[in-house]
Length: 442
Ligand SMILES: Cc1cc2nc3c(=O)[nH]c(=O)nc-3n(C[C@H](O)[C@H](O)[C@H](O)COP(=O)(O)OP(=O)(O)OC[C@H]3O[C@@H](n4cnc5c(N)ncnc54)[C@H](O)[C@@H]3O)c2cc1C
Image (cartoon, rainbow, N blue to C red; front, side, top):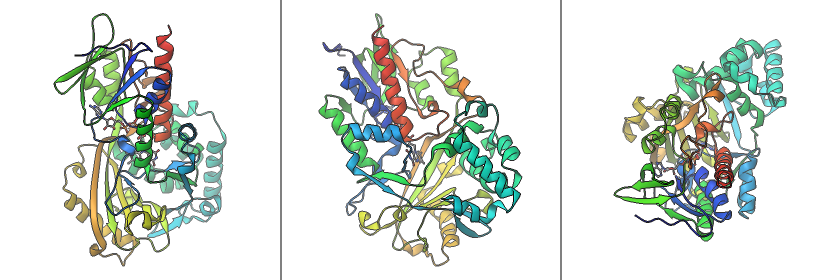
């Protein structure tokens, strides 16, 4: 066991080399502290990481990812890293399903023409409710009610049943769809843009560049190193264990899921642990398909699919309608993804069994589609993908500063009211770093 409290400051462990962990590391190392990151996988990037076939120039995100132009925490960080010239901005086409057809839904004129909302008063109510959400910054009262109640009242039954209920059903499943609070919906509608951005080379290229910059500045990153425990040390500080090894640190920041936090830090007081366990979230199952011709002849990128229409997944994303297929050796790339409870059968089915479930749906999108278009598939699953914010969620968010002095926790469940995203991983990582720095001056 080794103990070193650096001459130039604290010795700080960060568990998780996703975007939150790296963002915290960046500010802590810049403030002159010794930072070591412990990451269970062989690469940085976490949920935003990607993979690459030998013949591809760009990596592809395991789970579909893009940035909105309103993701200012991310773009500010990218600027600080001197990487702004590698941000790529596009305006791909998003469509909504209605009675067997897909309709564009990514501009005000497109929304006006979308038949699923009905006409006349229905459309006016939908327009006014959306406009109110775009303009107001006062989200707090909205967390006292559900999307279900608010939208029925203000946008009307037609718009709610056609637009928002299918989206909530898909994203949160039957159990939670009607319980999600309106502040979550406000955050989605308030700030999202139709122009989308990515990083030259893919999100993995961004994570690699970020990790390389941290290492250049002196951070140590331990890959393939799963943290198994964090225990307090007599006289202050922590013992962090991984495998049969352990190290000592003055401060620890954990950026894992709330469930994993309860496992590695069991000394936390019961009410904090219980608060973590009470948080609700869903996992995700995403299949990536490389096919030899485009699926959408109309150039559509993002298909919003209602479960009620019998599609076996929520999101169909033709990635190569966002970025050129030439970046991927000519492969056309599709994502079929869903947010699900972790006991759902999709977490158990084999890759081939899932593919057989998904293929008929692709024929519904393009009747010409044939299973022999598929060159290769990849399957990614994660237990922690989408926090579920229930009514008055702000009262239940665990503090970043845990009750154990020097132990901090930053996860997707705490970026509320915002929906989780890499932009908010940057924000919460940097917030955690600020707290660590402020507390060390007390
Ligand atoms: C399907 C899906 C689609 C998404 N789409 C977008 C999008 O379009 N745009 C966007 O910006 N965001 C998107 N996100 C969200 C985004 O990926 C996350 O908000 C962000 O990556 C979270 O970063 P994080 O650092 O908080 O957590 P994570 O990325 O989960 O990082 C935690 C890290 O800890 C590591 N780890 C786990 N256990 C241990 C252990 N015991 N010891 C050491 N290390 C461990 C993990 O390997 C991981 O690297 C999406 C997420 C999903 C699931």
